[in-house]
Length: 310
Ligand SMILES: Cc1cc2nc3c(=O)[nH]c(=O)nc-3n(C[C@H](O)[C@H](O)[C@H](O)COP(=O)(O)OP(=O)(O)OC[C@H]3O[C@@H](n4cnc5c(N)ncnc54)[C@H](O)[C@@H]3O)c2cc1C
Image 1: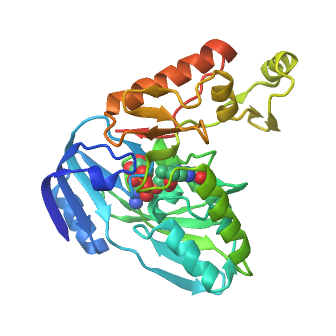
Image 2: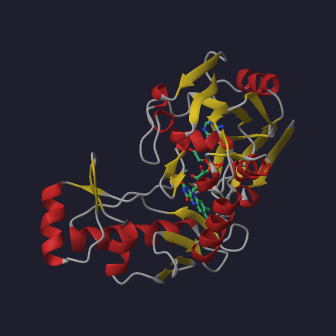
């Protein structure tokens, strides 16, 4: 177990925000995790993964918990259980090498297995929910194990019950995924190339990936917008008509827009980057507000952050 006090969170968030945490604890077993939870009951605790979807807005006056558990094992021919601290892309790389498919379209998404279930990560038409069978957790209050079936996780677009009514109550300890024997190496390679061309590379340019979620609007509103903007990309769905937030932002002329050290990424305007490497949280917060307000003023559509403000 690693137990550090008053540490910089710079290595623990991909945005590259240099704030401090009062304490940082990394456990390496479920027993250690239970001991930590027991010893610090009632204290402010935040469990993080790779910190690739977080925006630390100030110093964190509590305990940051991180998992050092990073193993995966097959439960049967088509079922793999991965521990929360394993990088999702490492898992996909291992599965691809072993001749398994199902998760290759999620290649190169930063972050760890635990958060893949919390966030219901997705890319290229596949979401974590399509391959998650169940999610194993520990209840932070009773310290008991609880298993959530796929249905009980109430997955939605970049969403799950762990972001709402269950937030902070359960720590995801491992995720059980369904995979099938099959060749995935070519698709994985193509996806890696496409993503590298379009998205900032973690470790080189600070970001949290897509800053905003794509909005869904009622059919009538989409029809009216289409009269004005016939070229507007739009995707009807049961939730309403999905409109790419990147298109809305680009129409507002905000590609490349800077504010302090923050910038709307030129190659993909859905992404806000720490362009100078020393952006302050307020730079990112204010730029995100500028983007969201501009889109609202022009299209009467509110785009909401995908990133978790801490
Ligand atoms: C360059 C880049 C590209 C990206 N591309 C995509 C993409 O294509 N698709 C996509 O969906 N996302 C994408 N993301 C966002 C990000 O990768 C995902 O949201 C990812 O799931 C975050 O994982 P993490 O381990 O970094 O979690 P963190 O950012 O550390 O945490 C995210 C949330 O999960 C909670 N959490 C973390 N671990 C646990 C746990 N074990 N138990 C309970 N709660 C937990 C945290 O408290 C927090 O609320 C991208 C990010 C970057 C930087």
